[in-house]
Image (cartoon, rainbow, N blue to C red):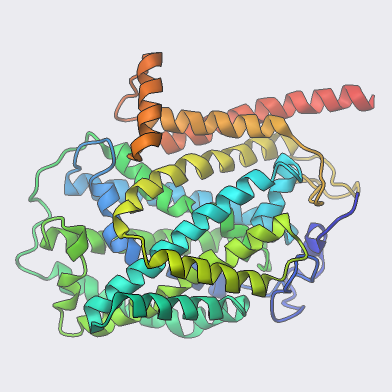
Length: 470
């Protein structure tokens, strides 16, 4: 059984030493630099937590699909709770990459098998292209508001910059730590001070209730967990596993909460109009400067999406040159961004959560069963993932079954607002006579259901293997 990538063994070579090549190899069979410490990773995740999409996207928390409007206090609480849960999930998903040196979709070879790992890889490519497209749309929206000019010009400019950044990904991460993070922190702090000092700001107006609290939390979780299937693409360059977990959990969690709370204040000032969320920021004396800093920084979001899309494609074609893939993917999202509007964002989030939250649950459930099991070399226990990360690793269809079970659990609780997709799940829920209580979180339920199903099916799989080999 050939191993098409060095990632299955590269985790033990340079971890903790900071040695190795300065940049990521163009193909999966190249060496994996283990050079990133806490500051670089923390700055990266902190920047991902601050998003122009987040300022307007918090509307999905305030007005969750299929649930009543939340009171502002409920929306803030849902933001905090959902972000803490989601960022912890991202931290967990970063650990296997740091332990093995393997990117996220390659790790799924150990969970599902080589061929079956193509299923989540394709879904990940689709969702990342969607995210990348939305990022260019919001960059163009903010840039047009700040400086004017045609939207298409902003989209093209952002697309070109995004694509160029993907050609030297580790250099991009170091740039974030040295320069961008400080400017972003100053800009966000200034905007927060300006918005919350407005005498006309009222966070108690507008009514609402706590009835849709968990639906709102699921929206905040969904924003965070969208990074689950890409976390190991970056954490595989971490010097330590614990650093990867802490940097992702803390760095991302703190800044997403701050970003959403600032977004809530801006929405309160414009009567909940998501299209006008940037207007109060531009009204600040230095609002244009702050918004331009955040607009320029937003390219780190689109950068991460394009880069990870290319790495996900490499799970299907390991010898494909990442640089050429990034050029092609950058062109695709640029074209798509010229015709997509931000109105589809909330629907997009609901589908993302239902797919990738249970995927993490399957990974955790399988890891709990496999802990203490020796690796393929007979030495180290497999603490995080199955050891066979070769391209043609044996298929594990039972893990796909557990994943589907978790997805179904999510949709039966929170089918979202996609016209055809959600209608089908609502019809099934009605046919089954299921009426989920308002306090039930689709994300937590699907994570637990998928994890329990995976653990049970992994034990069954192990017994079958024992009988066969015995």
